[in-house]
Image: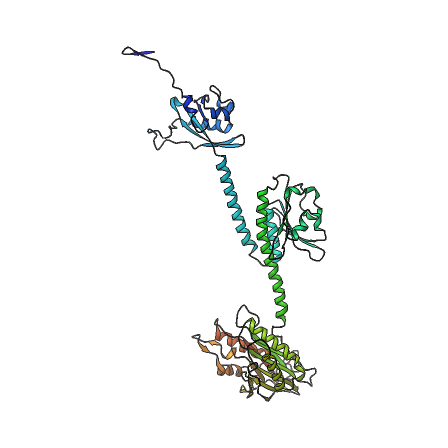
Length: 564
């Protein structure tokens, strides 16, 4: 006790007022530097049994809070939060957090009076759950976006099936099995184990042996995971490399466009938690995207197969030597992505060398698929009319009538050639129906224009046609072509037509060449003229009378040069 001017003063340690702590909105614990509890409000004693004055912090609080108190004491300059004497250089420790029972708390430390530390325990369970849920949804959204990119990157159904199984095994389960609709009596399946390559098999099995699989393959809603006993799964559903016990199973359909695309089976081992209801919903979201991708790839494969089958009859045929005559053809559609168009050619061989073969080259108005459809109709009609191939005008009249009675409003130009070998010469009968006149290149390089003419097909009720006969000596060639060559616009400035004269000069340089060489030369010059410019369909056929007499072999083994 000390006395100042007659007033006695007793120095006592100030203690927090318990009645004020009771008003605090959070549990509050006050402890000294030795770790002894000085005060605890009712909320704190209710939360932490034994947190009473005089108790030691390590004995009554969780370990994470006891460690936090020790760290606070180690920082002797920890200021009172908001105190005016707190300097910017003084370090304020961040809050510590951990679990108390089933809840999570964030503990904030402040300096009280007389070097006491006040701990405020804030229940942040809901906030943490919300943050975890938000992080999970962000991760799932990222996964779905990535999965969509991977699944839609290829329209190959096998690769899409493998990608579905692999993605599901890496993100959703330990094992994923993708089952597509039956192929005969077998189930096409893709097995994926997390971290391993996908294996595909065909299994002769009954899908009804797996609970919910038969229904999923038919597109019915999935069976809840809690209704499926993993012990009832048959051995054929499991991949050969998976031997561990199964804890949880999910079977979900893969919905497609109008028809189911298959089903997906997800398996989890005993070292992972069972599928929750939320995870099953997410699995169905992934299955919906995977099913759409699988359905699109299967539809593309089917359409591609149908297109290939139908296009097989629309593509120009490969030409060859026939009855002693050289034939060669070339075709270039207008579009780089197109394989067929409005230009066409065909060779209908005679039944024997004594009967003429019929060559037809034509150009349908327009280009692309619509023109190709009419091209196919014309070719089929001409195929049916080949018994009367000797009468060009009659064939053209019947073809004209067939086009006029169809729903197509397009017309076509055409040139026909009856070709027959007579000893060393080739005799041609040429008839044009509104088509550019054929060109003949002689052995001396002279180019002649065959004066045949006629009206186009499919526009008028009646047609006229004029037939001209031409004789080809050995080494001479008759060229049938469409106006895609002469009207090819290119050159140095890109706006000049290739033209008739330039084509004749090019053909003059081909004197004595085989039919294939003539076609390649004409196509090459036209391509160089066009560069990368737009153009119409281009078709060309060369008919060449082959040279038949050889000089002696120069080296005694190979054939010598052709002579006339």
